[in-house]
Structure formats: C-alpha cells, structure tokens
Image (cartoon, rainbow, N blue to C red; front, side, top):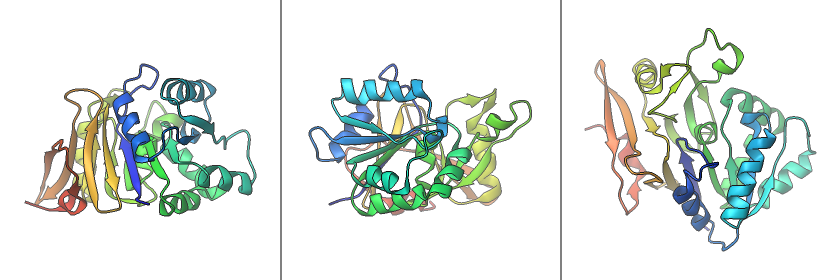
Amino acid sequence: MGRAIVAIGGGEIRTRGTTDIDREIIRLSHRERPKILFIPTASSDSERYCGRFVEHFGNFLKCKTDVLFLVDRRPSTREIERKILSADIVYVGGGNTLYMMRVWRHLGVDQLLRAAYADGIVLAGISAGAICWFNSGHSDSMSFYNPGNWEYINVKWLGLIGGVHCPHYNSMTRGVPRRKAFREMIRKIGGTGIALENNCAMEFIDDRFYRVISSKANSRAYRLYKRGRTVVTEQIRHEEQLAPVEALSSRR
C-alpha cells in the first residue's frame, strides 16, 4: 500500500472552503467510506472545532469519523494506539503547534504517527496539522502565551517531509505578515522553505513525489531558499501529474 501525506496551508471547513482538498484526501485512502480520525490537540480539544469536523467529514463527505481527545480526557496508551492504527486517515487540526508537540511527545503520539505512516495510513492536516509532518515549521505558537509581545518561531517536528513549512502564507497573525516573517526565517536558518496559502495544499506520495492541489482559484504554493545573501521565492506550479520531490530542493 502506498504512503500519502496531505499538508493544507489553511482554510475553513465550517464554510466548506477546503472541500476539494478533502475529497482528494478521501480518494487517497482507497476507501468509499474511510474511517477518519481527527486529532484536535492544537486547539486544546475544542468541542466546537470537533463538531464542525464531524459535520463536514461525517455528515457532508460521508466518512466514518472518530476523535482522539488528549487534553482533558487522557486515554490509555493502548486506546491511543488502537485509534491511530485502526484509522484509514488521520487528520490533525490547527492551533498551537508548540503545545501539540509537547502533548504528543509526552504521550508517544509522535511515534505512533510514524508507525501509521509506515502502515500506509493517510496522514493529513491543516495549519499546525500541516507543520507537524515536516522537519520543522514557521509557527505563531508564542502568540498563544504572550499576545502582546511575541515572534514567529521555528518548531522542529516529525520529519516525514523535508524542509521548513509555513502555512497561511498569504495572511497575518496579530498584524504580523507571515510572508515577510517566513522570508526572514529562511534568511537566518537556510534550507528549503515550503509555503502554502490558505485553501492550498500539497500531497506527498511514497517519499518520492508531490503535487500541489487547491480548493480555491489563485491559491498558491511557494518554495524559498537562500542564494548568497538573498532569499529566492518561487511559485510551485499546479500540475496534474506528480513531480519528483527532489525538485523542491534543487537550486537553479
């Protein structure tokens, strides 16, 4: 069975803004009615968020939905493992990336997600739930702790996808533009930056191929890298065919 990850830059399931992307996630499971597990840790297990997820993926898209609560209802290690490894799709919600990372590592969820990927379970997520699959990500987590005085940080993550990820590339957090801040981060740390605007996603197949997908016209993906003292920003083109992952790290 092939392995697949779909990272979504942002969007609202409440308004069905990511539906075309979500249908592609379902298609990748090769199931007519896949079992999809929602992990809402980054939102502190928000009941409203979970309700919207179940309504969208369950009632509207006809999946079999389940939720893994890890904040207030600490399940046993066996139950966490059962839920993750019995799913066809694991979908991670947005919110506080740094908080999610700490909870997952404490409970061993990060290792179980690596096992799920190895087993061919489709992994997907939005915002913080997109950052988590990359080597690291451009995170606004500090704004949750100190709204009046914070800056974007680079949070190290699972490393199933190479590069540094920036979601919401065309938006701001607390008035600070993501686009400008992410360029500055790549200037400082180097590497390959993968930036996604809202309603844009990238799917990665078998660690070898990728493709840009979107649910709204003009939603774009970009790669960033250093050339000398400057940061180069290039749009990653939408193509019907899969492209080799190596192309994302090439330097022209």
